[in-house]
Image 1 (cartoon, rainbow over the protein chains, first blue to last red):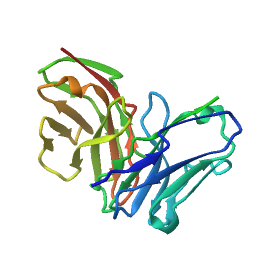
Image 2: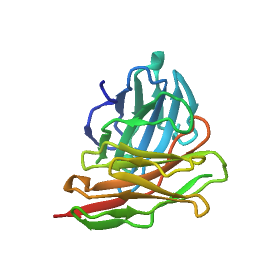
Image 3: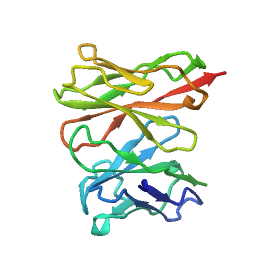
Length: 115
Length: 114
């Protein structure tokens, strides 16, 4: 069974440029998460989807970040314009969505460097 | 709000020895889950073990066991017979009841020495 797929793995851009990350969750997983992981920290939630609906986006900086999950499968996270402080690893995870013991499966992440 | 505290930024252990990684949590919910993830240098978060707040026995998964002390709000990870491949960052995380996101600690970097 294929795991969570993310692309690109690495991205280097200059500040004020736009950037987009793509995530393909495990087949059949209804819940999809985007996490931000700064260097030396644990991941922090940006947004959570139940199928195609964003049910928790309180931590998403909406002035520059946007996300979508069309048809409740793949998801895209966009930053426009990027700032130096956005340099981090962006992790996508998915789960079946079956309560507190529900295991989240993570992708390899996209490491973003903003120059 | 939930909070996870991992007080050990880094740990060293001799190969084949056991090691305990500390984790304390703070939540007002009665129903919650506790998780440990491993993050090697490749970056992927790998699920290791899960403990539910109502589980009476400590969780075990192969060489991993979770020392769950509910009254102390601690959920320490014990790795037995350490291997060189265990060298990685280890994150403790929790989630409350329902389909809520994980809250992670800052992690502990484990280095296994030959």
